Length: 283
Ligand code: NAD
Image (cartoon, rainbow, N blue to C red):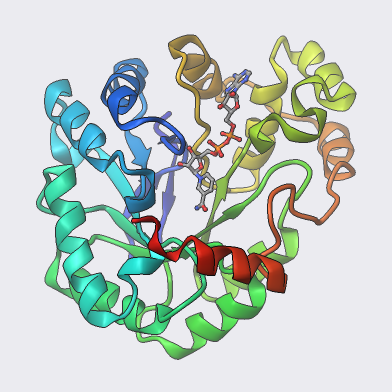
């Protein structure tokens, strides 16, 4: 649990955290409270999840010192452009009830992300954000942005799981000192994930579950992880990945599960762009 990834500006980020996508605002405070009680110290939320207030409330209730926590949030498209993003950062600070956010990301690679990114850079320099980055920036757009900004993204959060392993994307990120963070680390159960025979057999050999094997595989690849569950037992299970190691042969078997394709939506596809234009007003 204490394993950290050193970001390009030198700050240490817990490698394993807890994500709250699709956790209702009402449920969020209880879930984050449970996650903190079992030992998670990094929480991933977003303006678009409409539950930043629940995260803030759970943090306050936990009594854990702010400096021992790592809060991640993301700016939504409707808040892009310099001025709007600047104001939206302050709104997230207010909802999270905190003086600073440890890592703020641009949620999607559409609309005026250059303007929004400049707002991130300025808030970073002012100390409102300890680190900044992006999400869903596939290599083409990632390289463009990272090459044209003053402070390259410290993190890029992209769909990453055993069926879409992002090896090439991770290499490009390394060139800019950017750490890779996985969303959907359990593939949200898609593609028969929880009954995958390769993962089941490897799990059996180590006395571990399919989820634990998949998370361990990515942990060993220096990927930042935020599995989500609303059940405290599964939260514990998803954390319990530090006491075993995969063999080279097991790693090769898991590597062979990679299809190189998204199980959700391909951000390079024009239809995806159209879909997000429809979702711009979400927040
Ligand atoms: P995930 O891959 O973490 O899967 C979560 C689902 O798997 C749960 O709803 C539950 O049904 C199941 N599950 C979890 N642990 C289990 C276990 N041990 N055994 C059996 N079933 C289990 O999916 P996710 O929530 O989409 O991704 C994790 C986090 O990533 C999110 O909560 C969010 O913080 C972030 N995220 C970011 C983006 C983005 O665009 N940046 C997109 C999606 C998710």
